[in-house]
Image (cartoon, rainbow, N blue to C red; front, side, top):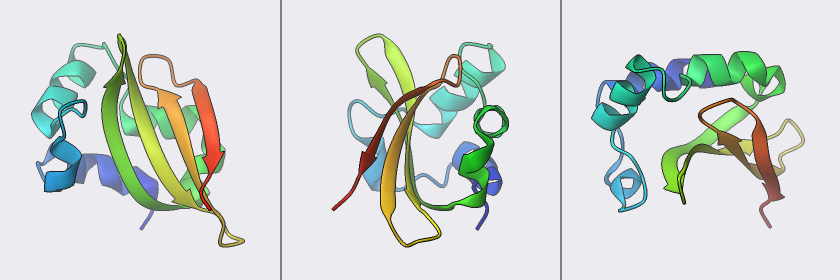
Length: 101
């Protein structure tokens, strides 16, 4: 599945129960923030980070870290390595990249 198709599913309310932890945002809240222009849509995040769109998305969470809202993407690269990227939802800039072991 291409990452670009995940946001409509997320907005439609198909977020897993695990994604509704206390620091994570639900799909209605995410849609409100996108519509108000407070955060970027996943589509826009992918436009700003084109290398992400060719990867296999394993997990996506939208959560708060302090006062910042972030997209946390777990991605499998073409070499099979799994990485986690945190992207600032307000401006699309990468916050961190971690390699899962």
